[in-house]
Length: 484
Image (cartoon, rainbow, N blue to C red; front, side, top):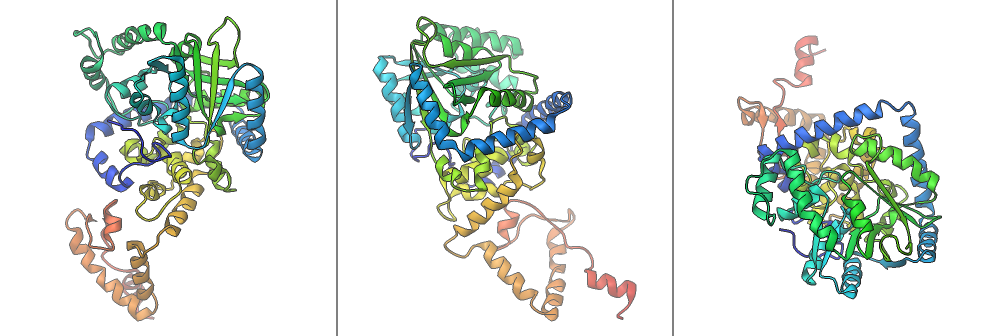
């Protein structure tokens, strides 16, 4: 069960390195089946709707350009956003990190006298650990997105941007509902419609009684102060319109300059995330409208390391992410390990480059130092990204940062030094080649080496090593071409 985050950055670090967590995930065959089925389904839907758009690559480049322009003048756009929100009756709060953001929200909720809040899915509040902070303050937070509700009831953490409960199947969800959901029908089956209706009945009571709603943001338009949330179930619309008070937590990178810029992303996001031409529910609101919707609106602008990412001319690309999850769905590593292995609330290829930049890498023991290595560098993530983030390049960049953070020699350092010695002269190299024959013995019948002593254990702890070939290139050349 998640606990209140002790790290001021919130839930951007796990408790163990990716290789250790991935080992455990790979042993869970049910998890792998669930992930494989879900990601294949989403990939197929996305491919179909993207294929309908003749100018898809032009749209991707437009999204990339808008994001680059936004990051280049982010401070002035945020000031403009604050001015417009304030002019339309809203209140803006600035939070340096997760702790400050949680403190602001908890104080705002307490100020209303409410002891319950309803929430629409928000990666920003998952990042800060807001639910745990509210619980510690005596406030019950109810997730209203179906997948987030499943995660919350199972005392779990999200495993995916778009489908937080992607690691669960219908039978598991039924058991969670029967065990955790008050008043659920004991004859509940695992039919999707029955599960959705059970969640609807459970949540409807909360929608009608909650006085405070908490949301995230998909996009914020600087020149009008308009905020937008897109979703598929209608729960977001309920959270955004029914409560008296609405509190929105927004990562500062979510701003776009104008409404015409928003148009581009409302074409890119649904196709890349849910495989739909448009989202069933696209909600926008601007400040407070007397007699219509929440009469008190607060916007919390969250930094939490984003300024540090922005300072990197290349690394700031990671802030272009629109949380569509396309890179997760095509990543062969994510498909086999799921999101929990990454530790951070941001999993997959984008999480592997974003999380280390948000937190910084404190040294070789920092668990986030292992995240950039959670990739085969196949490049599928870049091909799928709707805003053309060069994730493979950023992964290499962050691997270099992880190496630079080492303050003592590592297994990799020792291995590279040994290889340098072996390759220094032809005679040493021939001796090293002969020694490879031992590897064929270790590989056995399966011709795979699964365990080696230090320092090569750093490789075999995370992957198998193929058996050396029966003969070296030198031996082959001598046999086929003679000594001359």
